[in-house]
Length: 266
Image (cartoon, rainbow, N blue to C red; front, side, top):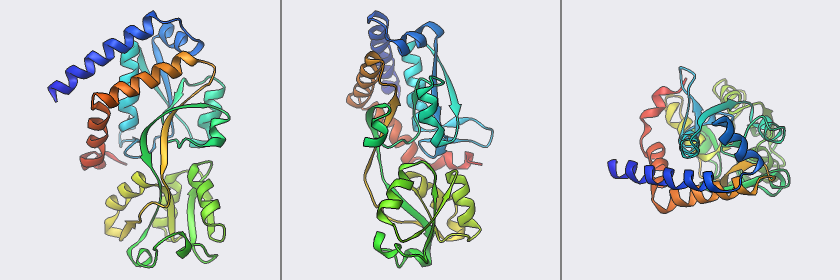
């Protein structure tokens, strides 16, 4: 661990030097002048980003955000908002970047630029053991009698509409609302990103909830405005160094393999 921290410190120094000497772009120039990096997240996708019982935002993405802020010599400010408000907030320059389990898709890429992926996810169902026994793939739930809660404005919604056109999709504001419907037995399942579904299956195993294998494979990336090539290049170099030094893998395994943080969820 000590060796990892030393390597991380070296990377921070190298990246900060790169940012300091390069010709500034509109976004990175503002970050360096204000000494503040503003990151947008929905904080609703544990273990990537989530709120703890005391209201703090934690997760793999927050570790990455904090590392980037430190490398820039800036403090980190996290803006939490509904997922479907993140891209408009970025476009209106209320935030500098998005770190919120956001899948890189062609449609989104027409509006914003992406760097990554830093994580690979996929869509999965959270349901009861009894129901899960009869699910081997999308075709088994693609009927009007199968109700699925789906968070609005997400890749989940888009994939659900494409893979499950005959299913009864209940569109909700967030994963939390979808989970409430499932717990109340108002729907037969909820659909969301695989890491989130696995976490909730673990948390609510007393209710008999289980996850199924993902229906898709999705790259997760950092969302930024396309008007600042330097910031895009900076994040790309930063992530590459994190990957090459093995630090991204260490951070990822911390959240995937060590489940102690689940006790901090509300």
